[in-house]
Each structure stands twice: as structure tokens, then as C-alpha cells.
Image 1 (cartoon, rainbow, N blue to C red):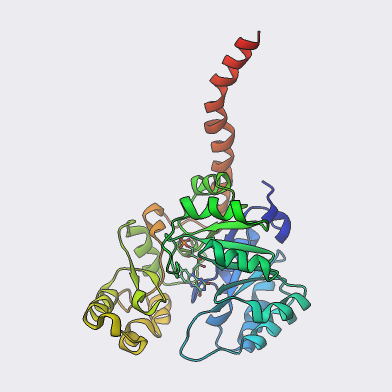
Image 2 (cartoon, helix red, strand yellow; image 1 turned 90 degrees about the vertical axis):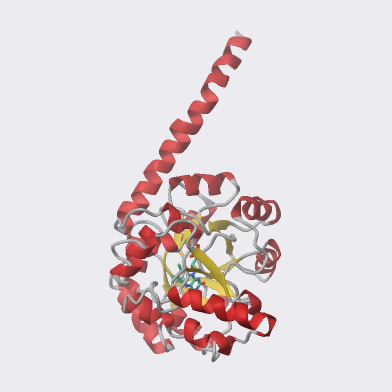
Amino acid sequence: MQTRITKLFGIRHPIIQGGMHYVGFAELAAAVSNAGGLGIITALTQKTPELLAREISRCRSMTDQPIGVNLTFLPTFSEPPYAEYIQAIAEGGVRIVETAGRSPQAYMPGLKAAGIKVIHKCTSVRHALKAQQIGCDAVSVDGFECGGHPGEDDIPNMILLPRAADELSIPFVASGGMADARSLVAALALGADGINMGTRFVATKEAPVHENVKRAIVEATELDTRLVMRPLRNTERVLKNAGVDRLLEIEREKGEALQISDVYEQVAGVYPKVMVGGEMDAGAWSCGMVAGLIHDIPSVKELIDRIMADARRIIRSRMAEMLEPHAQREAELLA
Ligand SMILES: Cc1cc2nc3c(=O)[nH]c(=O)nc-3n(C[C@H](O)[C@H](O)[C@H](O)COP(=O)(O)O)c2cc1C
């Protein structure tokens, strides 16, 4: 399958693995790229630019296919040295960066000078248009369903994707709620050039996270995510657990007066506890509604091959057959 995204990034299948804190290590990124998708290392999981450089070179030793690096500009307790992270990315020979959170505008000249293609992840048409205007090569359009930060507009992909298709001229991928061939074909029908998946890739053999995390995703239904930090305008979709229940209780108690420091215990330093330690009640970690569509823990290659084979079947058989009786009747009328 060829789309504007496969051509832009030089990949075989229009499937991207979104950056994921404490999940997007070299092992997962290499597995996705080797399977023909685009694997992405998450920069800020590496505590320094030097460690990111090491992670990139570890990934390079596992794949000769294109890989990307995610740079997330979110409110953190201290601002990371972004320019130095970009230098590590450029020197590591990576030519694709997924930006997310705030606009990457300030870093575009540096990224472009290094010959890097930028795909910006955003949750609204206006931010997607802004990304196009500042020279991003593509965007990843993240609907309200998504695991992580869905923004504050709450527009699901059924509306957001065709809206983006109507407005954008650069290629874009659908992100949020994507799990299988049905998601891919639907996203293509709505105007996207491919899909970006987060939660689905966490529940794979190669994702270097604790087995409890994978099991929790398989056991979860589409009803088991919660939105946290909305009063701080930093909304995050996470999997419900005891830590998240406590966080929501604090949000209810504090109301509009909520400060980030009130929920520090439930949001800071949670990822290593969950992803490495398997402590499933430690606090807020991103997970999409798509958990309701995830029932197994395949290898990345099994997952991607299955998506591509099923997508061909849906397009060639299921959809083509829907047109066939009509085509026959047309032929009869013309005869
Ligand atoms: C565990 C986890 C951690 C994530 N961490 C990040 C991150 O650090 N930076 C980022 O831009 N997106 C992050 N995301 C969002 C994903 O890249 C992707 O946009 C999102 O998961 C898509 O929605 P889906 O989970 O429904 O597939 C994370 C998602 C998950 C599930």
C-alpha cells in the first residue's frame, strides 16, 4: 500500500508508532521499523541528550530501516534542553522527528537545517493548519479517543479527520483509537494517509514494559479510561486505577483552585513505577479507549502483517463486493 506518508518517510506500510514515555525505547522502535512501519524513540524518556544519542545508536544496531524520534513539549517541572536533544537526533543520523505538545515553531529552523522531516501531533484543525504554515512536513491528528493528551476541544476522529482532510494540503495520519485493519481502512476513507498507534503497540511482545501493563490493557474495556488534569488545561486520558481514583478525588475537592502541586504524587515519577515496576495502581499513565479493541499480545510483525492483510481483504472483498451488484445492474441497464 502506497500513500503520501509511506512515500514521505520511505516506509513500507502507512503505520507509525507514536512516541511513548517509558515505552518508546530502541527495542520497540526497531521492531516497528523492521516490520515496515515507522518506529519512534521517545527523547525525553532519556534523561540527557547523551543518553538519547546512546539510545539512537542502540536502535541503529537493531534496524537499518528509517526510525524517528519524538520530542514532546509539555509543561514539565523543569524545561529540558531541547536544542541539545535536537543536536543528538541530527548527529545520530535520524531524519524524522515527531513533535507534540506546544508548537515546534522555535525549533523548526534547526530541524530543517539538519534535513529532518517533522510530523507534528496535534488535536485540532487550527493547530494542524498552524503546523502546516510553519513548515511541518506532515501532521498526526489525535482525536478525543486517544491515549495521552487529547487537548481541550473533545472532537472525536469521526469528525476531526474529515475536517483535517478538508483543510490541510500536507499529508496526515489518524491517531487515537487505531487498533486494526478496520481502523486503517476507515482512516484512509476519512482522508488520512495512514495511522499512528500508541496503546496498541504497548500490548506487543517487543514493548519493553512490565507484563502487568500489557495484561491491564488486554483486560481493560473501552469504559476504563479517565480524563485527568482537565482543571489545569493539561487533560490526559489514562487507565483507571487506585492512584487515578485518588487524583480525581483531589480534583473534586479542590475544584477550580487545583494546582499541579496538589496532584504531584499521582502524576510525577509514575511511569517508571508502572512500566518498569509493574505497579498498576501507582498513578496516571496514558492509555486510550482503544484498549477495548485490544485482546492479545502479538509480536509487532504479527500485528502489522495482520493489519495489512486484513486491510487488503476489507478493501478488495468486503467493500468491492458491496459495489458489485450495483455494477451488474448498471451493465444490465447499458445492455
Ligand atoms: C503509555 C503512553 C505514553 C505516551 N507518551 C507520549 C509522549 O511521551 N509523547 C507524546 O507525544 N505522546 C505520547 N503518547 C501518545 C501516543 O504517542 C499516541 O499519540 C496516542 O497513544 C494515540 O492514541 P491511542 O493510544 O488511542 O493509539 C503516549 C501514549 C501512551 C499510551
